[in-house]
Image (tube, rainbow, N blue to C red; front, top):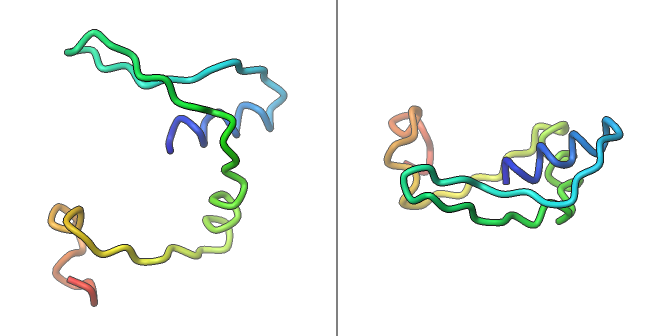
Length: 71
């Protein structure tokens, strides 16, 4: 998602992009990321401070896990 958000920001600045990717140095590989998937909805939710909870296994390393109502 991060690459898509950066691509969106660059597009707002008038920059041209043809592709994006994530590089894994230890594996010597680059995985392509489709940068033109629409992220406007995500940007709107961030600006409106709408962060829907998504409890799951990822919560174990969350800094606020002990005070989270879903934890």
